[in-house]
Length: 73
Image (cartoon, rainbow, N blue to C red; front, side, top):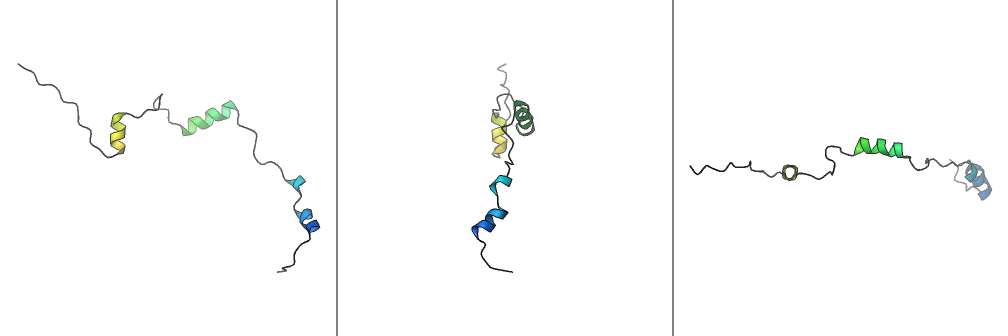
C-alpha cells in the first residue's frame, strides 16, 4: 500500500461536493405521520393514562380485590 499523501487537487477529484445528494426526503406529510403513529403508538386508551391496576402490575405489587361490605342483619 502506498502511504503517499494526495494533493488537494486529487482529493477534489474523488470527493466533489456536486456529486453528493441529499439522502433525506423532505418532511413527512400527514398521511405518513398517521401511518407511523398507528404503527408505534398504543391505541388501547384514548388518553393513554395507565390504570392503578396496571401501575401496580408493572411494579410487581399486589392489588387487593374489592371487599363486599357485610350485611348488618
